[in-house]
Length: 265
Image (cartoon, rainbow, N blue to C red; front, side):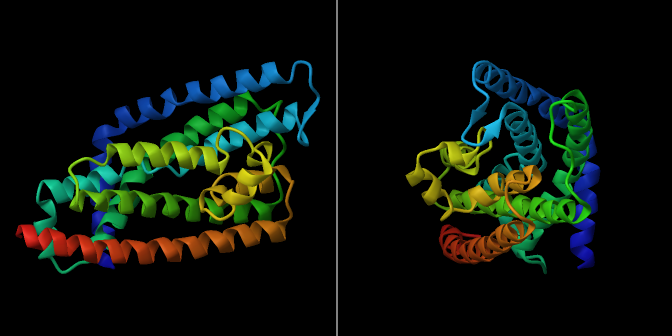
């Protein structure tokens, strides 16, 4: 465990080199939030309630979903995994007494630390700006549950990034797959708007995928539209998906490694 802690701390130190770039990326994404709030403000000019959401609740939904989304982003970590495979760095890592999967998880943990702190500062500014339009914070236990869901959501996103990165065992290009999944996951998770606004078919289908539990369910819990018990159920399903995704990672890793070794390490 100590060696993975060293990996985390080394990556944190390395990320300090890119802190200005991370800050620019994080603050640049405020434009997305501004666009969404402007759109919904215009929509609610002549309407009081849409599918059970008042203007006040919709703005709260959009702001919290945006904040939750950027706290759990992996910042294209699949590129790191693909680069290890394409450049042969994986060969050096394979001969070391450590699990590559645990290694990349440790690197990702160190990599997100600085970005996480910057997004917290960014979020404080955003919440301060919108404070008159947002739903008040829930009770302590609900906040604690939301923090647990935040961690689970980050690792779901990380596991998906690792799986996409492993596609590099078979192809030189993974950007298309990453972009497609990113757009699809944002849509199905309810990042831009509540999933309940979609037709019933899409609403039902979304619950068979992990994405709805990463944004929509936590925001519903924050708004008080679902109970604490339903929030716990959402967290349990996230944990179940983490197990499923980890199993997929192990399977794809073994298949990819056979392909990698056949090329020659």
